[in-house]
Length: 203
Image (cartoon, rainbow, N blue to C red; front, top):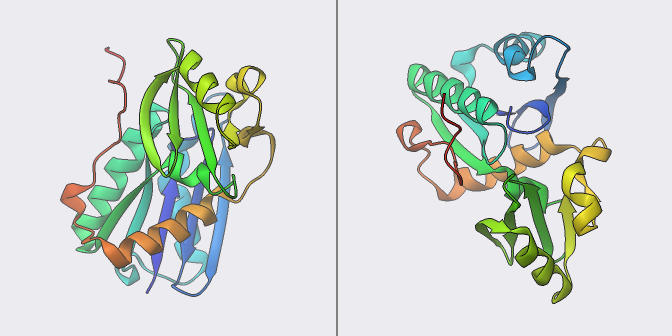
């Protein structure tokens, strides 16, 4: 089975090609001065497939990060995955960025990402809690024994580890979670939807 996994929701773009047993290729693309990293998604996918002598029709499934994160990135990720899966008639599954980052926290992880408006996208106790007021997040952290994963914006307030300060293999983690979900989900591309915990900005 050939699986293509990609993520344009976070601060870097991750594209991974793998089989059930191993990673074939993993690439990270950062923003440039003039373009957001998702602008390079199609060219990066083409490059990875070419390097591995794999044609699009050789793919068996696609997995992506569905958010939360950059609204532009979420739209790009979901649109490309749905179009490719439909055209190739293959499975497609989505994973939340909160689930991905929770894998960095070891036992009892808590993930809190900046949601603006004095809120954080919160994941703890193995579930997504939504956009939660920062004061409430602080209470939860103080009253529990969590391994806190957050971003640069919230680290000073919440402590823990910022995922943005190290080169974590988030693409590989995504691909592992995709593999797990493919075993339990139907993978219908038409059911692949962005995870907008808060509504996208208007205009």
